[in-house]
Length: 490
Image (cartoon, helix red, strand yellow):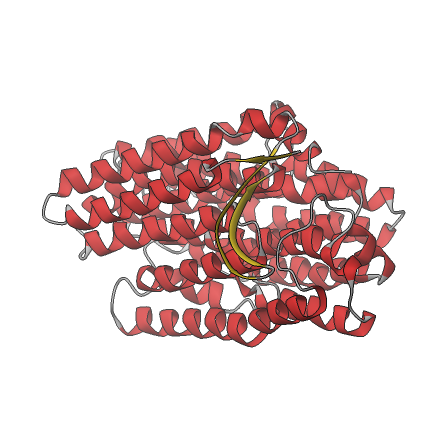
């Protein structure tokens, strides 16, 4: 049931106003940070206010402008929209408090530019979440890319510019070379860029030759390079030159989540389950991303730099989301979509921990972290919890993702995918467990002591601990997100 209302536009407007207020408050540090905090909280509550309507079976829609017949700048809120909208807005609150501690502790330069671009990246994420058409989706997708470039190149040194250059070339190149042609082909074949209602029948049911539908689908998968599916993944590890809160934004909050959300949205609302089944695109996509899941995990095992290991973990974990949706089984779709939530909380915790370790010790290498858990017990305790979630161990949130993914693979009687999920879980343990072991059980105190090293500032440690505990809460009580996603399923 459609309900015409301006409410889907409100979160985007709040973030836009917040960005402007941050910019005009550039000479008043406390005021600038206040706007960041206030904007993030208001954005989250504006998103959360739409949950009851969606749970009651309503799809909230609003058309801002009609550019041409079938090309609308419009917004819609359904179950899939809310999953990404809730996570990106809620994690922005965590990131904002963490940003304050991190940027002040290191006395970083260009903080106004940093906070402004951070906010506009969230604006792009909210716009992507609530886009009602491919036209709107493409617009906000590009906004994310443009305004995260200054964040990646924030340090303005040779390494930062190199990472930023690779970032912009990969993402702008694929969006112009693959994504835009895919959008154009969709309009040519269907005459309409709006997303379909429901996920069973997509827009291509109304037209298009099978070969060109497959070509268009492949262009979409290649065009959403933010999803970091191999071989279009290399920008992500290179972007780790950015400040750690930006890495958290890239990996957990906005950028890569926008990529996998867009792929999920296009698969379900543009092509539809029936079309993907008929052309066998779902299972081929599942096999394709399985290569990324396993290969990225193997590469992660070789990395001694903590952020680099986390980066390749993200490359692997993102493909779980696409894998689940590609199974085209209700349990698989649920497992893939809920992993947007579970990975978000766990991965932001892990990157926040990496930043806290750097602020407190200026250490980046895992090999230098023997016994650090004794000096930073809250940080490393949270790291251990988030690691368990990434591995898929109960009772942390990641277990819920893998439970449904396995059920989805079993539901389509595909033992190959089951084996891939089991192997990847072993690899997850292989690159996460040694970090916790080294921190708490290897090398006694490793030369660390509470007299020499203390936890990072409270504005950093509190978000770390709370985010890790939320992962546990979701793992024990997943009913809200499971019920919300259930509204999406046929």
